[in-house]
Length: 133
Image (cartoon, rainbow, N blue to C red):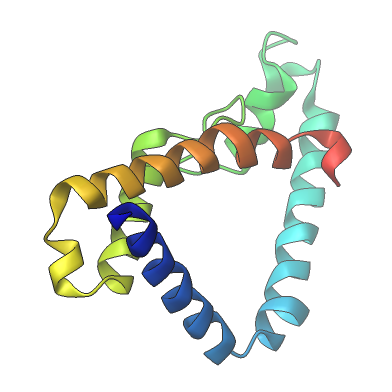
């Protein structure tokens, strides 16, 4: 019951923050820029495949693309690092929860683990599949 109330508080807080944000710069400027950069890096990694840039063909496409699109929370195979996601979830929980709920360690840990497992195991695996787009 307590875990459900904590999740409810977090979701309501995130909803109110999301509704207060002006999304037009993100939608019309940032997302197209990110997609364009990913497309350029995808094409570049595809061109470098089986050339001297890929160690005479020894490097995989995933490795070449990851070299162009490095992120601390994502491995070369496209897997999310659970420690990175757990840290991000803890930051969000600290910003969204009232102090008395933040100080309740066991409940916060359970909520954090539920979110990390859903994000890392369920959502991320589907989002990274080619059929998703």
